[in-house]
Length: 72
Picture 1 (cartoon, helix red, strand yellow):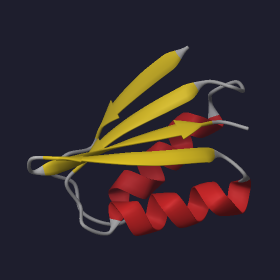
Picture 2: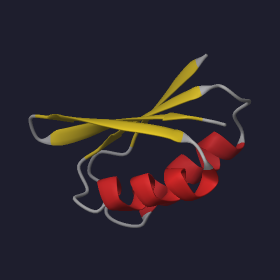
Picture 3: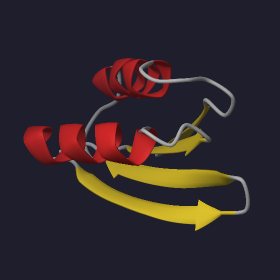
Picture 4: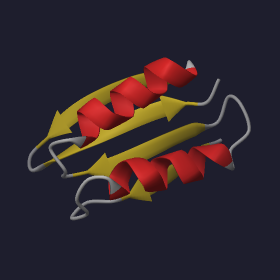
């Protein structure tokens, strides 16, 4: 199952906080797609995913970034 979280326009730490809360409600191996414009989001989401063991990828698009997190 896949869920999309659109946090474009929100500043740090809100994209991370909202992504963490959404993934906490998910069941493994659910995918959370996060759409963000915050320049800190790749750092925050990537470090958190690595620390928690979630799969993480990012795709930069024009004006925003799409992150894919797979809950472990």
